Length: 81
Image (cartoon, rainbow, N blue to C red):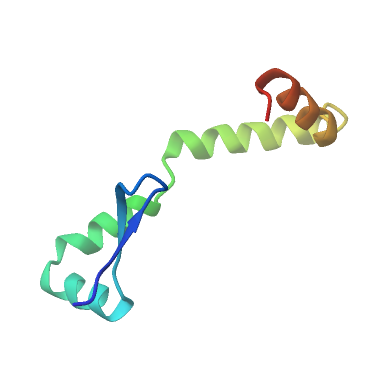
């Protein structure tokens, strides 16, 4: 198995890259990995509820929106980005 270690700008290891064939073999060998992988991408119900409510709010009042350019400027002013 050929692994590539990922590092930040200070040289700290932050992750591992596993080639896809090796990943598929690991999933066959360790069945519980597949469930972990599925769980990692599942959106929690409470997230879905918030998004659906926001969509409903927007449909009821489509003019109640923020201008993205103004929001960016506010963020820059407030946080210095």
